[in-house]
Image (cartoon, rainbow, N blue to C red; front, side, top):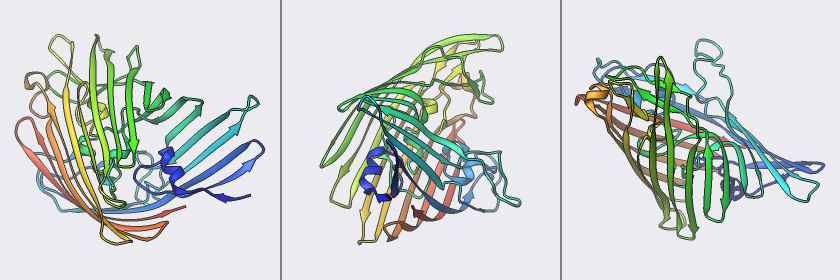
Length: 386
């Protein structure tokens, strides 16, 4: 028999912090199957001061590290896609020991370049977002990093919204939860800046997982989360063989001003934090002249205010920034020194499952030499939850 589940159930499961998805369920023997998702159209008019963003994810949503600097201004670009549309399946099975095991699979087409193009069919390959099981207090599989706080993400039309200063990562992990406490071992990866600057080196040479410890407290007034992370940064390639340690701390949360209005915030800082913050604008470490790794310190923060104008109208004002402590003698002057962005939107909730909205964004990226470039974007979105 087909039954409808309340929206709050989905939010609690953290399938998406950016949208209200409905979902339905059907039972097969001892297993209940739930499904849902949404269809979303995004259209964007983007103007950049110092060159054009190449075709790719930076044209589909805001990516701080790709705002052009030092180029020649070009005409504004218009892009439209439905790649953020997604679909999920969730199972709950009663085992022969009387306990339940739950599973989740979720896909979208958001970051699958270069598979697909815009010439004829606009076809893109599905991308795995989530694939995990939960049993007792354990979670095993790929999902949001434990170091990330979904509650602090803003109500934005952009894929993330407060991208510059926010923690954003999905990866395989083993997580144990007890009350408000969470401890996780997560898949490691190291991104490295060559000595003197140059193309990013992505290694897969870590011998230990990233370790995250987090405490999350929720109440009627909102929620707050404090997380710490310890990492190994490692490289073994092209005659290089070195490792060093990284660490980071995150404080984030949401404060409910009223039943409809809230403030969301995040503050993140650490050495070797690069790939976790701002969509890897900064690398985790840089190589010195002797081929040794030096962890790069990054600090990011974001603040968002959500306000309801009427029953069906709401807006969010969003500010986000990150500052990167690069050593110019090691990285050169072409690496990013800081990025920031402001955004404001107006969203019309035409029905519980139908939304239209427009969002304005201004962003700046400055490199270590002092040169900077700006981005201005107008985005329109329409979304149908099912």
